[in-house]
Length: 400
Ligand code: AMP
Ligand code: ZN
Ligand code: ZN
Image (cartoon, rainbow, N blue to C red; front, top):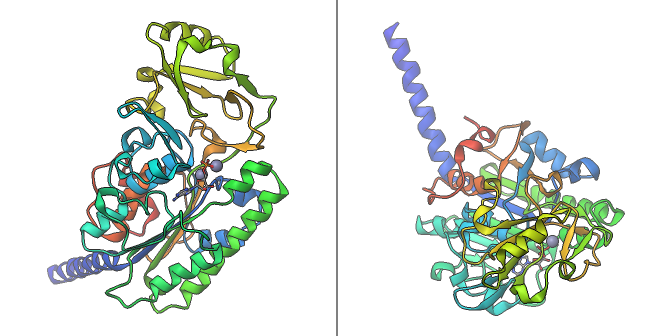
C-alpha cells in the first residue's frame, strides 16, 4: 500500500518536472491586430479565429489600459505597466520636464528611448538568455535600455513589409536552427484600425478587412503546422483597443467654454491634457463641470479605475469625453475612434490563443492587458519584472 502511494507521488513529481521544463522550451508568438474590437468575431466572418478558440482558448474580452490608444497600449502589452507608469501616456503628450512635445508621428521624439520607461518583454527575455524576433511592435525598433530585439524591423524603413511577407518573416525565424531561433516573436498589423477609423466599426469595409486579417492568421497557423517545431509553438492573437462610432453631431468645442487666457497649452485628444495658467484651474473645472458628455478631472483626482494621473506628462486637468463623443478644436472627419474609458464595451479587444501550454476549448471571462506581460514571461519560463499585471488572473487559460 505504502509502496503504491510512493510510486504515485514519484510519478506526479516526474510529470511536473517534465511539464516545467517543456514550458520553458516552447515558442510563443503574439500577434496584434490594431483596433480589433472584442466582438468583431461575432459580427464578421472569422473562421480561423473560431478554429483557434476550438483548439485553444478565447477570452470573452480583454480590457485595455487608459487611454485606449495605440502607443500607450502596445507598450502596456510589452511591459505589463499602465501608461501612467511606463510613460507613453498618449499617442502624443507634453513633456513638461524638457518642454518638448512627444508624438508617435514625429520620429525624433518617437525614437528617443528616454521616453520609454519599464522593461519590454523582449529585453526581459534576452537578459535571461533567450532570442527574440519582432515585426513592428511599438518600441521594438527603439534602443530602450540600449537594447533591440535579436531580430527586428524598422517601422520607418520604406517600403514597409507587406502583411503576407510579415507572416513569412515569422515562419522563417521558426525555421532557423535551434541556437538562433527566437523563443518570443511579436508581430504587428495596423489593421483593422485604419479601416475602422475611416468607415466606422459597423461597415462592410471593416467586415472585409477583418476577414482578410483572419485569413492571414489562418495562413500563419497552416505554415506553422508544417514545421517540425509546430508542437512547441504557442500563438496568441489580440489587440490594443477597440473602436466606436463617432459623428460630428457628438462634438464639444473647447473654445466655447475655455478662454485662451486660462490655458498654457492643451495636448492630445481623448483625453485632452490641459496645462493651465496659474490661478485658473478652479475656473476651468467650474465651467467644465456643467458640460454634458465630458468629464473633467484634476489630474490628482482621476478615478482610481483609470490608473492615470501621476506622470508629469499629464496635464493639470484631464478632459475625458464619454464614449463616442469628441472634445477639441474641430470634429474629426472619421467615422470611428478610440481612446475612451477601457470599461466601455466598445474599447475592449479580442484575445485568442492555442498551443501546447493552452487549454482546449476554454473560454475565459476576461482580464486586463497588463496581465499579458506576466503571461508571456510564464510561457517563456523566465522571471518577470515587477509590473502592474497579475499572473493569477490569466493562469486559468493554461493547462495545469
Ligand atoms: P492610432 O492613432 O492610435 O489609431 O494609431 C495607429 C497608428 O499607429 C497606425 O496606423 C500606425 O501607423 C502607427 N504605428 C503603429 N505601430 C507603430 C510603430 N511601431 N512605429 C510607428 N508607428 C506605429
Ligand atoms: Zn491602435
Ligand atoms: Zn486608431
